[in-house]
Amino acid sequence: TTFTKEPLSRGRHFAGKMSADLQWMILRNNSCFLLRNQGTTFTKEPLNLAGRHSFKHSGLVNKKAIGVTADPKGKGVVLTTKKDKVCK
Image 1: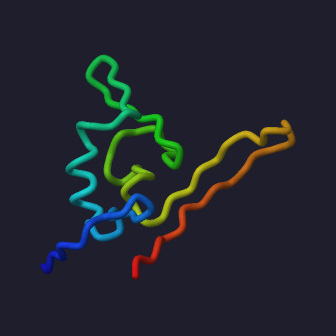
Image 2: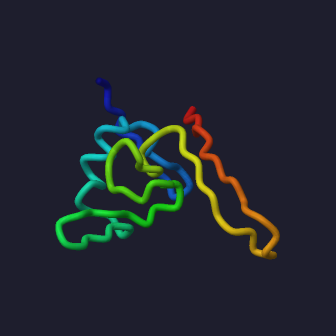
Image 3: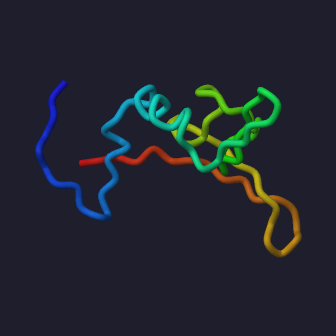
């Protein structure tokens, strides 16, 4: 593994440089989307269709994710897909 000492600018995302496992280790206990109720943990992540708080269902750390929301005009649903960001 190589590390660079470049400063991160505001518009630059470093999440692409971390593995999904490392991102999950950081987010699994510290997320604003967590809902804990009677020993069960759920999540309100936008790209998590199952609502379960697990690595498999997480829309934040996985490269491919799908989200479904209601259309703002009230005519059907909007399907949202997550694209893989390419860092150069």
